[in-house]
Length: 329
Ligand code: NAD
Ligand code: UFG
Image (cartoon, rainbow, N blue to C red; front, side, top):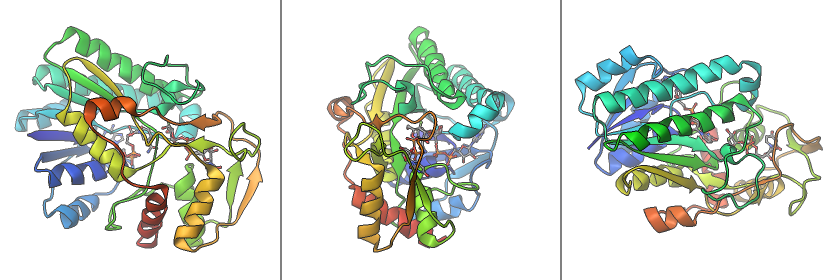
């Protein structure tokens, strides 16, 4: 079984490549290295003993994709490649619409043209907007507060509409909650460019002394301690979720939440990080960040019932592995 992994040198893609290679899949990566480095391939090889075939290609460019599909018989596409900085997408919407939508369209065209039966897309809990928790797959898709989120909703529609009228193509939309953590080897993990926007990379950089202090955005939400609540999921659990989705894919259009089903507040995450790693994280409580929801966590029963997949790692594991990776940088 050969799997084309777009964005395979990135954070979630690289962990998924490891899991797939270890399970015996033939992995081919397409990434333009916009937000990742080529040495991730060596790291994947150190972990698995096998270096995946790599194409430095822009997935929004159909001609570059044609080369890959002509040279390889691809059985499945896992489409991770895209831009993901929510704040940046507000300032430069066209950059996000162009890259994220044209990538999805060009890959869907290739799936039809080269008769690839399975397509998995990296979607996000952001498609639920500010709806009521826990989020269920059947919830309505709400307008997003940012163009990044809109590209996820639109990509879901593009792929669903395509699969509905092309019975040879099945599509699975995976809505991730908040991936954190890293591979236990400390070799691969999340490497943010510039100052991190997301909570865990910010915490690890404060722990390392690269940043002075964490800002906790808001303490007046209607949550357990007033700070935001998120469903943090270990990136390795998330990677296994992709393999389960690939192996159990049903004909047509499938949608699954990939989360733990448990909410953890920002303060709870900070305290767990401090306890398991024995490090103090200085922080200030500041105003809410515009666009943030109070609580976001998944109903994960569908993924468990239909895919037989469940997360195994704890918030402690996530904090330990995130710090181990950061220390190795
Ligand atoms: P990442 O930035 O680490 O990885 C994305 C990879 O895609 C990078 O290696 C980048 O170089 C590549 N890429 C971007 N545009 C490309 C293009 N046009 N052609 C080829 N390669 C391109 O991000 P990630 O955290 O691994 O996220 C992977 C996917 O999951 C993204 O689609 C993201 O939107 C989605 N997602 C991420 C999160 C999260 O919190 N990390 C949450 C929900 C959904
Ligand atoms: N937070 C802080 N301080 C920081 C960073 C974040 O207090 O420096 C808080 C936020 O206010 C929020 C929580 O930590 O309450 C999580 O924030 P993140 O930025 O880590 O994650 P988000 O839930 O805002 O968004 C992430 C991804 C999105 C994705 C969404 C759902 O960045 O792309 O999860 O999957 F859409």
